[in-house]
Length: 118
Image (cartoon, rainbow, N blue to C red):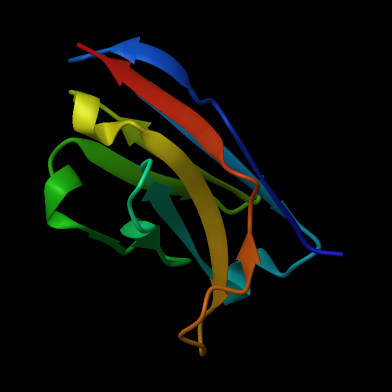
């Protein structure tokens, strides 16, 4: 049974930092691209970033230079370091796993709330 579990969300002031973690189990981690998404109230879920086995990563423009994704292939865990947070970063953040030869993210976490205050 595949499980994807996020942790590390919380409340932070604008300009602050948070680090999210996502632990994956029940899958061959090396075969999966790991991604982070977020969904703000009243908005559609949006892609933030994703990382492959070797560490290559893509970011959406709104987080470039502020967010960094990384993965620990021994611990089967992916991280999202979020710096210089803005109120518009407030959302539920989701971790997801996608097989390297597929376009669809098949496994999703339950989400973790990130709230950035003024």
